[in-house]
Length: 358
Image (cartoon, rainbow, N blue to C red; front, top):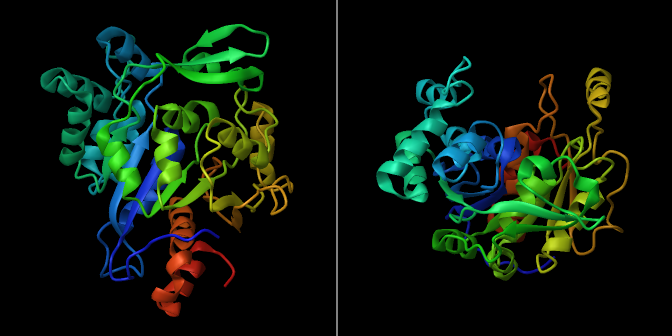
């Protein structure tokens, strides 16, 4: 275990979560309860920052991107709603999707709102900041880059394809993934958040289209590597048809290391609870299989990182991480370097809530 610099237990943690899609918003919804919760929780967060992939080119986001030459707002919107202190009316409004076949059909109100605010301010990042304030989001949300970039891939047969939607169908055929144009820069606020972080998580999320794009932004992987934060990789629960067919938990991590070999993870979080027979049948029909329960990942296969197993499944019909359990496990990982500064009662309380053995 590497040495990490932490202040004493009377101060909260600075947490940076990296990714996109449903995985990132799920994690954020579990972490937000700990923001400025020093009176209520044994561990709390002073700052929570999300660094979000902005290469989506499908659905409402793709249409707005093509028509208005703006960054795709969908994943950003989901993160804002996940962090919203008021998860009722305003959040429902931002997630409302218009019906019908007209120009508004298929668009979400939140995407339209971000598009309008981007045009008014002339700055997508400022529009995100203002929208987060309206939703009373308990954290900071940063686009991985404000450059209008396209996710591209060179395939094993030598051909090149462009666009996240296309890449999501050819995961096993990818030789090299990159952003076009190359040299896209992160926001200064992004690099500052990484530098000040006590814990940085990557995942869960779609491997090629949510997890890798942010660390492909120029300087982000180096900043993560140079940070003294605890670094955690969260394995996905299932493979994704077309994108990660047959990829084991170990292969997911090795792919991230291929593109960011300078990042040394301290912990790898893996769910070890099998899904139900009904879920197995449902997902098998879609071409997906469960990750992490077949022994592909072990201390012998993950150099330098400690593996943390736990029951991380939500109880719904769809296979999803339980937001609360995942957040608790991540915080336990963050606490390890200063475990002696936290009361044993508080630490064991978190372990019980996370479903981990004492």
